[in-house]
Image 1 (tube, rainbow, N blue to C red):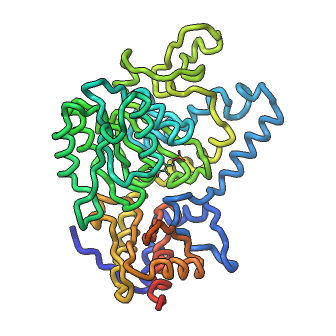
Image 2: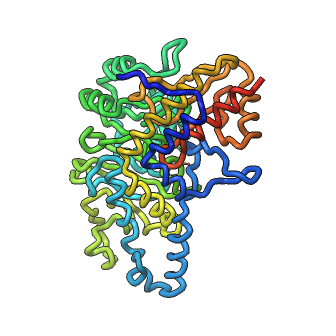
Image 3: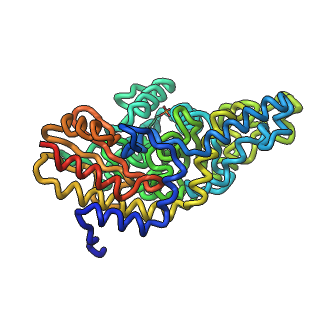
Amino acid sequence: MEKLQFKTSVGYAREMDDADSLAQFRESFIFPQYKGKDVVYLCGNSLGLQPKGAATYISEELEDWGKYGVEGHFESRRPWFAYHTFFTKSLAAMVGATEKEVVAMNTLTVNLHLQMLSFYRPTKQRYKIIMEAGAFPSDMYAMETQAQLHGFDPEDAIIEIAPRKGQHSIDMEDIEAAIQKHKNKLALVVFGGVNYYTGQYFDIQRITQLAHEAGAIAGFDLAHAVGNKVLHLHDWKVDFACWCSYKYLNAGPGACGGIFIHERHVKSKDTFRLAGWWGHDEKTRFKMKKGFKPMKSAESWQMSNAQVMNMAALRASLDLFDQAGLDRLAEKSFMLTAYAEFLLQQIKHLKFQIITPSNPLERGCQLSLLFQSKGKEVFEQLQKNGVVADWREPNVIRIAPVPMYNSFEDVYRMFEIMQKVK
Ligand SMILES: *Cc1c(COP(=O)(O)O)cnc(C)c1O
Protein backbone atom coordinates (compact mmCIF):
# COMPACT_ATOMS: atom_id res chain seq x y z
CA MET A 1 0.00 0.00 0.00
CA GLU A 2 1.16 3.49 -0.87
CA LYS A 3 2.08 5.59 2.11
CA LEU A 4 -0.63 8.19 2.59
CA GLN A 5 0.63 11.77 2.54
CA PHE A 6 -1.45 13.39 5.23
CA LYS A 7 -0.73 16.87 6.57
CA THR A 8 -1.10 18.46 9.95
CA SER A 9 -3.08 21.55 9.06
CA VAL A 10 -6.68 22.62 9.08
CA GLY A 11 -6.28 23.76 5.48
CA TYR A 12 -5.41 20.23 4.46
CA ALA A 13 -8.41 18.83 6.37
CA ARG A 14 -10.67 21.29 4.54
CA GLU A 15 -9.19 20.30 1.20
CA MET A 16 -10.04 16.70 2.01
CA ASP A 17 -13.58 17.74 2.87
CA ASP A 18 -13.91 19.68 -0.38
CA ALA A 19 -12.89 16.60 -2.32
CA ASP A 20 -15.26 14.34 -0.37
CA SER A 21 -18.21 13.27 -2.53
CA LEU A 22 -20.14 12.23 0.60
CA ALA A 23 -19.66 15.52 2.45
CA GLN A 24 -23.23 16.68 1.81
CA PHE A 25 -24.67 13.83 3.90
CA ARG A 26 -23.66 15.74 6.99
CA GLU A 27 -26.52 18.13 6.21
CA SER A 28 -29.00 15.30 6.64
CA PHE A 29 -28.28 14.97 10.39
CA ILE A 30 -29.06 17.01 13.48
CA PHE A 31 -25.94 17.84 15.49
CA PRO A 32 -26.21 18.58 19.23
CA GLN A 33 -25.21 22.16 19.99
CA TYR A 34 -22.50 23.31 22.35
CA LYS A 35 -21.88 27.01 22.95
CA GLY A 36 -23.94 27.82 19.89
CA LYS A 37 -22.06 25.49 17.54
CA ASP A 38 -22.38 21.95 16.24
CA VAL A 39 -20.42 19.59 18.45
CA VAL A 40 -17.66 17.49 16.95
CA TYR A 41 -19.53 14.22 17.25
CA LEU A 42 -17.20 11.22 17.43
CA CYS A 43 -19.58 8.92 19.27
CA GLY A 44 -21.55 7.27 16.47
CA ASN A 45 -20.31 3.91 17.75
CA SER A 46 -22.44 4.45 20.83
CA LEU A 47 -25.46 6.36 19.52
CA GLY A 48 -25.67 7.62 15.95
CA LEU A 49 -26.98 11.10 15.21
CA GLN A 50 -30.59 11.76 14.30
CA PRO A 51 -31.32 11.84 10.58
CA LYS A 52 -33.48 14.85 9.76
CA GLY A 53 -35.86 12.54 7.89
CA ALA A 54 -36.74 10.63 11.09
CA ALA A 55 -39.28 13.22 12.21
CA THR A 56 -41.06 13.07 8.85
CA TYR A 57 -41.31 9.30 8.85
CA ILE A 58 -42.54 9.17 12.44
CA SER A 59 -45.08 11.96 11.96
CA GLU A 60 -46.42 10.31 8.82
CA GLU A 61 -47.17 7.18 10.82
CA LEU A 62 -48.87 9.26 13.51
CA GLU A 63 -50.86 11.00 10.82
CA ASP A 64 -51.94 7.74 9.21
CA TRP A 65 -52.84 6.22 12.54
CA GLY A 66 -55.02 9.26 13.22
CA LYS A 67 -56.53 9.18 9.77
CA TYR A 68 -57.18 5.46 9.37
CA GLY A 69 -57.24 3.86 12.81
CA VAL A 70 -57.19 0.10 12.38
CA GLU A 71 -57.56 0.40 8.61
CA GLY A 72 -54.01 1.74 8.58
CA HIS A 73 -52.79 -1.86 8.63
CA PHE A 74 -53.74 -1.94 4.96
CA GLU A 75 -54.63 1.62 3.96
CA SER A 76 -51.75 3.73 5.26
CA ARG A 77 -49.06 4.90 2.85
CA ARG A 78 -46.72 2.23 4.21
CA PRO A 79 -49.18 -0.46 5.31
CA TRP A 80 -48.32 -1.67 8.80
CA PHE A 81 -49.11 -5.31 8.10
CA ALA A 82 -46.13 -5.31 5.72
CA TYR A 83 -44.03 -2.69 7.51
CA HIS A 84 -41.05 -4.97 8.19
CA THR A 85 -40.75 -5.68 4.47
CA PHE A 86 -39.83 -2.04 3.78
CA PHE A 87 -36.42 -2.69 5.34
CA THR A 88 -35.50 -5.95 3.73
CA LYS A 89 -33.83 -4.71 0.58
CA SER A 90 -31.68 -2.11 2.35
CA LEU A 91 -30.68 -4.50 5.13
CA ALA A 92 -29.83 -7.27 2.69
CA ALA A 93 -27.49 -4.87 0.86
CA MET A 94 -26.08 -3.68 4.17
CA VAL A 95 -24.93 -7.12 5.34
CA GLY A 96 -24.44 -8.94 2.03
CA ALA A 97 -27.47 -11.20 2.22
CA THR A 98 -30.35 -12.30 0.06
CA GLU A 99 -33.74 -10.84 0.81
CA LYS A 100 -34.83 -14.15 2.33
CA GLU A 101 -32.11 -13.95 4.95
CA VAL A 102 -32.77 -10.72 6.85
CA VAL A 103 -35.51 -9.06 8.82
CA ALA A 104 -35.76 -6.03 11.09
CA MET A 105 -37.18 -7.02 14.47
CA ASN A 106 -36.78 -6.75 18.26
CA THR A 107 -33.56 -5.59 19.87
CA LEU A 108 -30.10 -7.05 19.76
CA THR A 109 -29.84 -9.14 22.91
CA VAL A 110 -33.35 -10.49 22.47
CA ASN A 111 -32.46 -11.53 18.94
CA LEU A 112 -29.22 -13.11 20.10
CA HIS A 113 -31.18 -15.25 22.56
CA LEU A 114 -33.76 -16.21 19.93
CA GLN A 115 -31.01 -17.22 17.53
CA MET A 116 -29.24 -19.17 20.26
CA LEU A 117 -32.47 -21.08 20.81
CA SER A 118 -32.32 -22.05 17.15
CA PHE A 119 -28.61 -22.66 16.76
CA TYR A 120 -27.25 -23.60 20.16
CA ARG A 121 -28.72 -27.08 20.54
CA PRO A 122 -26.02 -28.66 22.67
CA THR A 123 -25.64 -32.37 23.36
CA LYS A 124 -23.60 -34.12 26.06
CA GLN A 125 -20.80 -34.47 23.48
CA ARG A 126 -21.05 -31.09 21.77
CA TYR A 127 -21.87 -28.21 24.03
CA LYS A 128 -18.91 -25.83 24.10
CA ILE A 129 -19.04 -22.23 22.97
CA ILE A 130 -15.97 -20.32 21.83
CA MET A 131 -16.17 -16.55 22.08
CA GLU A 132 -13.88 -13.54 22.38
CA ALA A 133 -12.70 -12.55 25.85
CA GLY A 134 -13.79 -9.01 26.63
CA ALA A 135 -16.99 -9.27 24.62
CA PHE A 136 -19.77 -6.80 25.28
CA PRO A 137 -21.33 -7.73 28.65
CA SER A 138 -24.74 -8.51 27.17
CA ASP A 139 -23.11 -11.19 25.03
CA MET A 140 -21.30 -12.68 28.02
CA TYR A 141 -24.53 -12.85 30.01
CA ALA A 142 -26.39 -14.32 27.06
CA MET A 143 -23.82 -17.11 26.62
CA GLU A 144 -23.66 -17.76 30.36
CA THR A 145 -27.40 -18.16 30.76
CA GLN A 146 -27.83 -20.11 27.53
CA ALA A 147 -25.31 -22.65 28.81
CA GLN A 148 -27.26 -22.81 32.08
CA LEU A 149 -30.58 -23.15 30.26
CA HIS A 150 -29.29 -26.37 28.76
CA GLY A 151 -27.92 -27.63 32.07
CA PHE A 152 -24.24 -26.86 31.53
CA ASP A 153 -21.79 -25.08 33.78
CA PRO A 154 -20.74 -21.86 31.99
CA GLU A 155 -17.22 -22.24 33.42
CA ASP A 156 -16.90 -25.50 31.52
CA ALA A 157 -19.01 -24.71 28.47
CA ILE A 158 -17.64 -21.29 27.54
CA ILE A 159 -14.11 -20.84 26.21
CA GLU A 160 -12.88 -17.28 25.87
CA ILE A 161 -10.03 -16.37 23.55
CA ALA A 162 -7.98 -13.49 24.93
CA PRO A 163 -5.24 -11.36 23.38
CA ARG A 164 -1.72 -12.61 24.11
CA LYS A 165 0.10 -11.05 27.04
CA GLY A 166 1.05 -7.47 26.25
CA GLN A 167 -1.27 -7.35 23.24
CA HIS A 168 -4.73 -5.90 22.77
CA SER A 169 -5.97 -7.70 19.69
CA ILE A 170 -6.84 -11.37 19.46
CA ASP A 171 -4.61 -13.38 17.15
CA MET A 172 -6.38 -15.32 14.42
CA GLU A 173 -3.92 -18.14 15.12
CA ASP A 174 -5.20 -18.42 18.67
CA ILE A 175 -8.80 -18.59 17.51
CA GLU A 176 -7.81 -21.32 15.09
CA ALA A 177 -5.89 -23.26 17.75
CA ALA A 178 -8.81 -23.12 20.19
CA ILE A 179 -11.28 -24.34 17.58
CA GLN A 180 -8.89 -27.19 16.74
CA LYS A 181 -8.37 -28.10 20.36
CA HIS A 182 -12.07 -28.25 21.23
CA LYS A 183 -13.39 -29.43 17.92
CA ASN A 184 -14.94 -32.63 19.22
CA LYS A 185 -16.94 -30.82 21.84
CA LEU A 186 -17.61 -27.59 20.03
CA ALA A 187 -21.20 -26.55 19.36
CA LEU A 188 -20.87 -22.86 18.58
CA VAL A 189 -18.37 -20.13 17.79
CA VAL A 190 -19.76 -16.68 18.48
CA PHE A 191 -17.83 -13.47 17.94
CA GLY A 192 -18.47 -9.78 17.64
CA GLY A 193 -17.91 -8.37 14.17
CA VAL A 194 -15.96 -5.46 15.61
CA ASN A 195 -15.03 -5.61 19.29
CA TYR A 196 -16.70 -2.67 21.07
CA TYR A 197 -13.71 -1.90 23.28
CA THR A 198 -10.65 -2.34 21.09
CA GLY A 199 -12.25 -1.77 17.70
CA GLN A 200 -10.71 -4.98 16.35
CA TYR A 201 -12.56 -6.34 13.32
CA PHE A 202 -12.54 -10.12 13.16
CA ASP A 203 -12.14 -12.21 10.06
CA ILE A 204 -15.75 -13.36 9.89
CA GLN A 205 -15.25 -15.50 6.83
CA ARG A 206 -12.27 -17.37 8.27
CA ILE A 207 -13.86 -17.89 11.67
CA THR A 208 -16.97 -19.26 9.97
CA GLN A 209 -14.93 -21.62 7.85
CA LEU A 210 -12.98 -22.90 10.87
CA ALA A 211 -16.16 -23.38 12.89
CA HIS A 212 -17.73 -25.34 10.06
CA GLU A 213 -14.65 -27.52 9.64
CA ALA A 214 -14.99 -28.38 13.32
CA GLY A 215 -18.66 -29.26 12.84
CA ALA A 216 -19.85 -26.20 14.75
CA ILE A 217 -22.15 -23.27 14.03
CA ALA A 218 -20.81 -19.72 13.55
CA GLY A 219 -22.77 -16.71 14.78
CA PHE A 220 -21.85 -13.02 14.99
CA ASP A 221 -22.97 -10.02 16.97
CA LEU A 222 -22.58 -7.22 14.45
CA ALA A 223 -23.49 -4.30 16.74
CA HIS A 224 -20.28 -2.46 15.82
CA ALA A 225 -19.86 -3.85 12.33
CA VAL A 226 -23.19 -3.13 10.66
CA GLY A 227 -23.10 0.13 8.74
CA ASN A 228 -19.37 0.26 9.46
CA LYS A 229 -17.84 -2.59 7.46
CA VAL A 230 -18.73 -4.07 4.09
CA LEU A 231 -20.09 -7.53 4.91
CA HIS A 232 -20.85 -10.59 2.79
CA LEU A 233 -22.65 -12.80 5.26
CA HIS A 234 -24.30 -14.98 2.64
CA ASP A 235 -21.14 -15.72 0.67
CA TRP A 236 -19.16 -16.19 3.84
CA LYS A 237 -21.72 -18.86 4.84
CA VAL A 238 -22.28 -17.31 8.26
CA ASP A 239 -24.99 -19.26 10.07
CA PHE A 240 -26.61 -16.40 11.94
CA ALA A 241 -25.98 -12.80 12.94
CA CYS A 242 -27.77 -10.02 14.74
CA TRP A 243 -27.26 -6.30 15.23
CA CYS A 244 -28.70 -3.16 16.76
CA SER A 245 -29.58 -0.07 14.76
CA TYR A 246 -28.82 2.79 17.13
CA LYS A 247 -25.05 2.81 16.66
CA TYR A 248 -23.78 3.20 13.08
CA LEU A 249 -27.29 2.78 11.68
CA ASN A 250 -28.48 6.03 13.32
CA ALA A 251 -32.00 4.82 14.06
CA GLY A 252 -32.26 6.30 17.57
CA PRO A 253 -32.23 5.04 21.16
CA GLY A 254 -33.75 1.58 21.55
CA ALA A 255 -34.13 1.25 17.78
CA CYS A 256 -35.38 -1.95 16.23
CA GLY A 257 -32.50 -4.37 15.51
CA GLY A 258 -32.11 -6.95 12.80
CA ILE A 259 -31.17 -10.53 12.12
CA PHE A 260 -29.51 -12.61 9.43
CA ILE A 261 -30.17 -16.32 9.06
CA HIS A 262 -28.41 -18.15 6.28
CA GLU A 263 -30.74 -19.44 3.57
CA ARG A 264 -29.78 -23.06 4.19
CA HIS A 265 -31.18 -22.80 7.73
CA VAL A 266 -34.20 -20.83 6.60
CA LYS A 267 -35.05 -23.63 4.19
CA SER A 268 -34.16 -26.59 6.38
CA LYS A 269 -37.00 -28.50 7.99
CA ASP A 270 -34.69 -29.22 10.94
CA THR A 271 -34.35 -25.61 11.99
CA PHE A 272 -36.22 -24.86 15.17
CA ARG A 273 -37.52 -21.43 16.01
CA LEU A 274 -39.81 -20.16 18.73
CA ALA A 275 -42.90 -19.09 16.89
CA GLY A 276 -45.42 -16.29 16.92
CA TRP A 277 -48.13 -15.32 14.45
CA TRP A 278 -45.94 -12.93 12.45
CA GLY A 279 -43.57 -15.75 11.56
CA HIS A 280 -46.43 -17.83 10.19
CA ASP A 281 -46.95 -18.14 6.45
CA GLU A 282 -48.58 -14.86 5.50
CA LYS A 283 -51.06 -16.50 3.13
CA THR A 284 -52.80 -18.26 5.99
CA ARG A 285 -51.75 -16.00 8.87
CA PHE A 286 -55.16 -14.45 9.30
CA LYS A 287 -57.00 -17.76 9.24
CA MET A 288 -55.85 -17.92 12.86
CA LYS A 289 -55.58 -21.71 12.83
CA LYS A 290 -53.55 -24.18 14.89
CA GLY A 291 -50.22 -25.53 13.54
CA PHE A 292 -47.26 -23.19 12.92
CA LYS A 293 -46.20 -22.98 9.30
CA PRO A 294 -43.09 -20.80 9.00
CA MET A 295 -42.60 -18.18 6.31
CA LYS A 296 -39.86 -19.26 3.90
CA SER A 297 -37.56 -16.46 5.00
CA ALA A 298 -35.90 -14.98 8.06
CA GLU A 299 -39.30 -13.40 8.67
CA SER A 300 -40.29 -16.72 10.20
CA TRP A 301 -38.29 -15.67 13.30
CA GLN A 302 -40.64 -12.72 13.84
CA MET A 303 -43.00 -13.29 16.69
CA SER A 304 -44.92 -10.09 16.72
CA ASN A 305 -46.15 -7.54 14.24
CA ALA A 306 -43.79 -4.72 13.32
CA GLN A 307 -42.94 -1.94 15.82
CA VAL A 308 -43.94 0.74 13.39
CA MET A 309 -43.16 3.88 15.41
CA ASN A 310 -39.78 2.58 16.40
CA MET A 311 -38.94 1.38 12.91
CA ALA A 312 -39.90 4.62 11.17
CA ALA A 313 -36.63 6.29 12.19
CA LEU A 314 -34.68 3.32 10.86
CA ARG A 315 -36.32 3.84 7.46
CA ALA A 316 -35.11 7.45 7.45
CA SER A 317 -31.58 6.33 8.18
CA LEU A 318 -31.55 3.51 5.64
CA ASP A 319 -32.63 5.98 2.94
CA LEU A 320 -29.31 7.71 3.49
CA PHE A 321 -27.33 4.47 3.39
CA ASP A 322 -29.12 3.50 0.18
CA GLN A 323 -28.09 6.82 -1.36
CA ALA A 324 -24.53 6.93 -0.10
CA GLY A 325 -23.73 3.25 -0.67
CA LEU A 326 -21.71 1.23 1.80
CA ASP A 327 -18.75 0.87 -0.56
CA ARG A 328 -18.29 4.61 -0.85
CA LEU A 329 -18.75 5.02 2.89
CA ALA A 330 -16.12 2.35 3.51
CA GLU A 331 -13.70 4.11 1.19
CA LYS A 332 -14.13 7.39 2.99
CA SER A 333 -13.95 5.61 6.34
CA PHE A 334 -10.60 4.15 5.40
CA MET A 335 -9.19 7.66 4.79
CA LEU A 336 -10.93 9.37 7.68
CA THR A 337 -9.77 6.89 10.31
CA ALA A 338 -6.30 6.74 8.81
CA TYR A 339 -6.20 10.54 9.05
CA ALA A 340 -7.30 10.42 12.68
CA GLU A 341 -4.60 7.86 13.37
CA PHE A 342 -1.98 9.98 11.62
CA LEU A 343 -2.89 13.08 13.63
CA LEU A 344 -2.91 11.16 16.91
CA GLN A 345 0.56 9.86 16.12
CA GLN A 346 1.77 13.48 15.90
CA ILE A 347 0.83 14.05 19.54
CA LYS A 348 4.05 13.40 21.41
CA HIS A 349 3.44 14.94 24.83
CA LEU A 350 0.61 12.64 25.96
CA LYS A 351 1.20 9.06 27.00
CA PHE A 352 -1.24 6.87 25.17
CA GLN A 353 -1.33 3.98 22.79
CA ILE A 354 -3.81 3.26 20.02
CA ILE A 355 -4.95 -0.27 20.86
CA THR A 356 -7.05 -0.66 17.71
CA PRO A 357 -5.21 -2.56 14.95
CA SER A 358 -3.44 -0.21 12.58
CA ASN A 359 -4.23 -2.45 9.63
CA PRO A 360 -7.43 -0.99 8.11
CA LEU A 361 -8.58 -4.50 7.21
CA GLU A 362 -8.64 -5.34 10.90
CA ARG A 363 -10.65 -2.36 12.09
CA GLY A 364 -13.68 -0.25 11.29
CA CYS A 365 -13.85 3.49 11.87
CA GLN A 366 -13.25 3.40 15.63
CA LEU A 367 -9.93 4.07 17.34
CA SER A 368 -9.45 3.23 21.02
CA LEU A 369 -6.80 5.19 22.91
CA LEU A 370 -5.38 3.59 26.02
CA PHE A 371 -3.86 6.22 28.30
CA GLN A 372 -1.03 5.55 30.72
CA SER A 373 -1.87 8.80 32.47
CA LYS A 374 -4.09 11.87 32.13
CA GLY A 375 -6.76 10.00 30.17
CA LYS A 376 -9.57 11.56 32.17
CA GLU A 377 -8.07 15.06 31.80
CA VAL A 378 -7.85 14.64 28.04
CA PHE A 379 -11.42 13.39 27.92
CA GLU A 380 -12.62 16.35 29.99
CA GLN A 381 -10.77 18.81 27.76
CA LEU A 382 -12.42 17.28 24.72
CA GLN A 383 -15.82 17.64 26.39
CA LYS A 384 -15.16 21.24 27.42
CA ASN A 385 -14.32 22.07 23.84
CA GLY A 386 -17.40 20.54 22.28
CA VAL A 387 -15.98 17.17 21.22
CA VAL A 388 -18.22 14.22 22.02
CA ALA A 389 -16.10 11.08 22.49
CA ASP A 390 -16.62 8.10 24.74
CA TRP A 391 -14.90 7.14 27.99
CA ARG A 392 -14.45 3.49 28.99
CA GLU A 393 -13.08 2.48 32.36
CA PRO A 394 -10.34 2.25 33.38
CA ASN A 395 -8.56 4.56 30.92
CA VAL A 396 -9.71 4.30 27.34
CA ILE A 397 -11.09 7.03 25.09
CA ARG A 398 -12.95 5.70 22.07
CA ILE A 399 -13.42 7.93 19.07
CA ALA A 400 -15.38 6.97 15.98
CA PRO A 401 -15.12 9.24 12.95
CA VAL A 402 -18.22 8.14 11.08
CA PRO A 403 -18.00 8.51 7.29
CA MET A 404 -21.72 9.31 6.94
CA TYR A 405 -21.55 12.60 8.84
CA ASN A 406 -18.06 13.31 10.11
CA SER A 407 -15.58 15.50 8.29
CA PHE A 408 -11.82 15.59 8.11
CA GLU A 409 -12.06 18.93 9.87
CA ASP A 410 -13.92 17.23 12.76
CA VAL A 411 -10.96 14.94 13.20
CA TYR A 412 -8.59 17.88 12.99
CA ARG A 413 -10.54 19.75 15.71
CA MET A 414 -10.17 16.81 18.04
CA PHE A 415 -6.43 16.73 17.36
CA GLU A 416 -6.08 20.46 17.96
CA ILE A 417 -7.70 20.19 21.39
CA MET A 418 -5.60 17.21 22.40
CA GLN A 419 -2.46 19.07 21.32
CA LYS A 420 -3.31 21.82 23.80
CA VAL A 421 -3.77 19.57 26.84
CA LYS A 422 -0.90 20.40 29.19
C1 LIG B 1 -24.35 -2.25 21.88
C2 LIG B 1 -24.18 -3.69 21.98
C3 LIG B 1 -25.20 -4.50 22.52
C4 LIG B 1 -26.44 -3.88 23.09
O1 LIG B 1 -27.52 -4.72 23.09
P1 LIG B 1 -29.04 -4.23 23.17
O2 LIG B 1 -29.74 -5.50 23.34
O3 LIG B 1 -29.33 -3.51 21.90
O4 LIG B 1 -29.19 -3.30 24.33
C5 LIG B 1 -24.98 -5.87 22.55
N1 LIG B 1 -23.85 -6.41 22.07
C6 LIG B 1 -22.86 -5.65 21.55
C7 LIG B 1 -21.62 -6.28 21.01
C8 LIG B 1 -23.00 -4.27 21.51
O5 LIG B 1 -22.01 -3.52 21.04
